[in-house]
Length: 368
Ligand SMILES: *Cc1c(COP(=O)(O)O)cnc(C)c1O
Image (cartoon, rainbow, N blue to C red; front, side, top):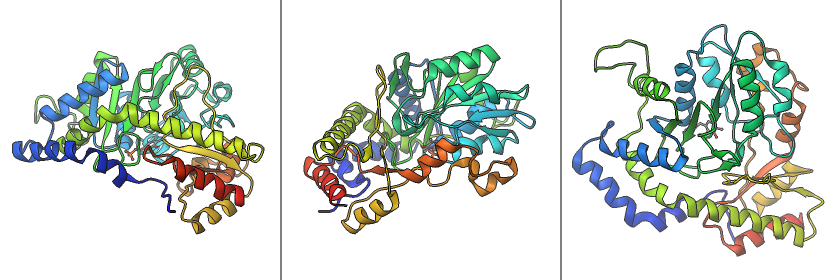
């Protein structure tokens, strides 16, 4: 048996009949940039996320960049974020000439530790970017309370978390702005790159709408310097079809996660494998099912030999990346993140995974 980390062909087989006419329709209209498909999909995402506005852009990375541009973040400013995330979470800060300030994570949820944020706040601090890692919303109530006390903006990196929720609402609706990615491996993945910002604030929505169009309004009149970052109409057409399936796909991932956790307990592996947690009142969408084990690299080799895919998210925490060396962090600066980078791994969790495949994965781990 072969169990890949992700099988997008299996998903496509279930929606081919809906995707093909939607794509064909875009070609027939030859309306590729902005236009009705993009506007319609923005409306659908806003409704789905429980926000007033949604603004499409070219990628999740650009969504983060645009969010910080909307906040006027620049040289001299500091932004607090987690070192245990995808690179784009921190690069958006550096690209604007501001300084990323890393805050270690909680060992059970892998999300930013709110208890460690306040000590990092300086007069230069402008914003906090929590990440809803693997599809679990960070402790936004605590983060928002700290931000309010110190007058900081909060931007949610919800790239992995569309549709996930905390007791206070859905990912993206819990702060000034939320950023989604439609990279193909996300729960809502496009046929290429794509991203979206969501917000409840009228002025922020207006500003983001201008910033993604070179800062122009009306066309060819530039009051601010923006970038070219739009969601293609083709992507909007594909994503609009896929959004209709997102709830059931994410439920499928949750069912698979529960199944893994049950199998791990049944096969007597519970003391050797730390399984993901979902705090009370939260809805996890399991963009990844990440376990913690001893001898992680040995286990990954064993799985690979048995045709089972796995991945490390992420092998090098951001504070130890070469490009951030001048920030002065060292091995030991962020011990919880560093330990997670050494001991965690993601197992296949996509919706179309069968019970037999999951049993094979856990049996193969048990044999190791
Ligand atoms: C995927 C991802 C991004 C970037 O999204 P792209 O669409 O690939 O640019 C940012 N942050 C996190 C946490 C991600 O997982």
